[in-house]
Length: 215
Image (cartoon, rainbow, N blue to C red; front, side):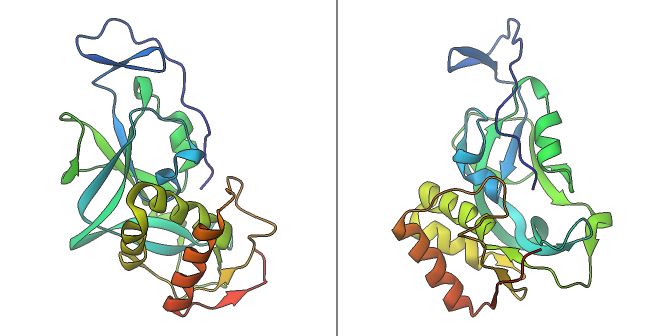
């Protein structure tokens, strides 16, 4: 969950098909990523041509990490399920910054996806690396990270879409570290009162356990 803030500057050359973004000519052939967690929140990155999308055959799940005692969110193959998220371009096919942000993950091509862009030949999704997953341990979920994710879904998909996020995410049996006042997550965001109340209400409905223990 180490995350890059800015997209890379690149030389677009003279592509046959391009679109303008912030004064830059962006090739239509640029690959895209599908974000389903913090990358849905546009305040955490500056990747261009972002748009809402839905992938079929995937769900989300909280996994325990071998890297530290914080659980991370990953996409998992799930027949018959689907998840909403955000796609955005990776200018110049320069995956370095995003791969560093998602360094505990593998990138895989997405096959079954709906979005409003013209046809995109290359959309990739990040799935947790098996060698970084821990089966046991006293891991916690970070409230500061969850706040960022849910804020993104509220802004992109509204309350109904944010509810779908909770419904299509598995692994809520780990305690949640109450770090909102002193965030551990480096790209934490300030929530409105309404956003904060929404998150707290949905966690209460899930019956999650809260803890003051920090990772």
